[in-house]
Length: 612
Ligand SMILES: C[S@@+](CC[C@H](N)C(=O)[O-])C[C@H]1O[C@@H](n2cnc3c(N)ncnc32)[C@H](O)[C@@H]1O
Image (tube, rainbow, N blue to C red; front, side, top):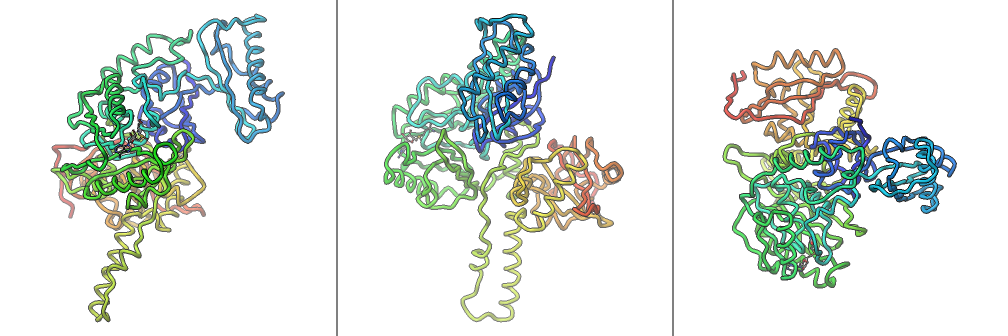
């Protein structure tokens, strides 16, 4: 089966989510740029991705990419591409076009040039002068960006947001792909209550129910490539059968969707029925001000009215204030709101922990994120990072690496405020000064533990981790942005594990990202004061040392597996781990690092020996 260069296209701001989805489907991402996620696959992979990608707009085959400063270059290079391998003699091949920051900016002329060049290419191959274009549609796009032409064949046809369940739309609906992206950016999982108090036509609850039940979003529609002559039809049939088999039973915890408009509730119910998730969602007509709950650890994800599209600004402000009022007692809840209103945080009454710029259609929005504490678990006392792990484990039980938060705008914790609140009103005694120093240190440690990646050492160390990975492993660990602080944050927030240690005789850990901290159940201060051998049980330490020595000799190893142990004694098996050497800018060896995205808790195992 031939392999293709594939591109999943995405709206601005959701690239990292789509990249994670692609990885979770089992395809390594080659690069992610400007709304495009590049990877490779064959016909089967094209069918799977069309059926399963939730946040991508389309799946394209990349036919060619080349500099096209003028029409001659565009024509000649297009003729040379292997069109006859893709387009049969009767293919109908409309050419869409766009041009951004390029000398060839007259899009109709660009489209015409490409069309002529493809005809020229087909003439040579098929020995014909005319093509009837009476067969299936093979949609082509020429896209010029900074004088580089990219020619693609669209395997999806209609955009992937067209799932087939939405027959009528309400006012200002969210795209299905965007709703799926928001849910995947949140910490919701099928065990937790999800509420959308402004559900409109029900897009967020319906997409969440499909995620929770592992239902392929493309099951209810067809795709352009299904009609293609060279595409084996059995593949589509098998892929759909596989998707049906992977569906999970009904959600135990129903999702709640409210709206004060009865027509919206009717639309939502109809959409849920069409999508086959009516039993997983309860829709109800309700004013936001009437929302009450006794449940803990719920999640709100919503798209309230914005001034620009729905309601006048005063009404919208009142709705945001009500939302803030009804949610403020819910200390354990996680809240996520997408809106174009700049005044949202002020009117809602709380600054977001994070913000992410997203475009809902052409409207620039912010996704305001207020993650709550992780749900209590019967068997452990999870730390602040455990929620990431819970979410990671739940999102379709897929544990490939990702970079889902790459564009999040994070507000630094205001440690000064914490310290200020500790200040004494009266003249301090010596004991007070000592106690204040301890408190200050504690506050500083708390600030560090909340966002260790903000510290200059971690920012620098992230560069060493990333540059060394590229040097030894030959690819990037995360997409690079030329912004060390941004890279430090994204590596810290990645859902795969990254840990490293220094070059001491008994090396001490000097880095652990959020997922590592959750897995080993400790904060950054504790982790970075621990000899790295203690991350493994005593019986596994020799084998671990041998593998470290092998990495030292060869630069890296990528096949490590072994058993690790968390601070509370939970054992987990890791596999496909990569261990690589760390060198600084002057080429000096400064330690070793490890990354992995596969682990499994060994439920019944107790630690095999107690460390002395
Ligand atoms: C932007 S739309 C939500 C669109 C929805 N996400 C979808 O995909 O269809 C906002 C919704 O909030 C509802 N709404 C406005 N004010 C409300 C209020 N005070 N209480 C409850 N619902 C309200 C509107 O009826 C509208 O359906």
